[in-house]
Amino acid sequence: MTKTGEAARPMPSIEPETLGETWLLYQKQIIIGAIVVAVGAGGFWLWSRSSQIKEEKAGVAFQSAEATFMSGNKFLAQAELEKITSRYKGTTAGTQAAMLTAQVMFEQGKHAEGIAQLEAVAGSAPKALRAGIQALIGSGLESSGKPAEAAAAFAKAASEAGFAVDRDMHHMEQARNLIAANDVAGASKIYKEISGREDSPFAGEAKVHLGEVSAKP
Image (tube, rainbow, N blue to C red):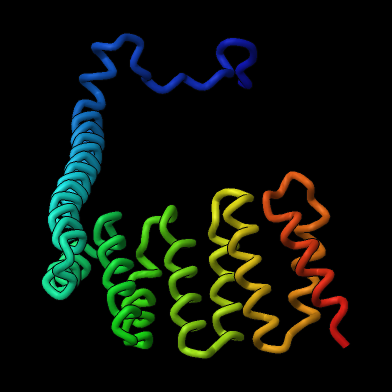
């Protein structure tokens, strides 16, 4: 005989109805889940704390090397800075050490070495310092007599800059090097764009340079 109504409904599976029953039925899964979460949180805390300690140690070491540099002993400072760059790569102070080392090398006429130093840390550098690294690379290339490559580096610096005024500054350097590389059209495009924005502190200078390049045959 076919059952109808309540009799036709399947018996429900037993489900926990109280917090106590839930714990009794799933205590193993809950414990394992809690351990996984705790280990994950603990691992993240340890990683964060380790990074913080590394940053602090790098900062102290860089301050010492910078003081040596400012005292006029650049050769000793360079040795200290290179150690910091190698030991604390990826930190703010480690990147600053590489940048200062490159400047010392540029002063010594070692432009290729300084550029290599900067390129080695560019990929792992904190975002706030990436524009500065590319600008320094541009300066090194410009001093090496490579204006086209320098212009490309300043373009990268502009793309990494976080503020409009910094972007315009790097673009102005890019345009100057483009002119030196005989790319007047490229420089004119930059000057025209910046001169058209009255809010840019470089608008007036860009207008002057635009007039100069436009007057060239």
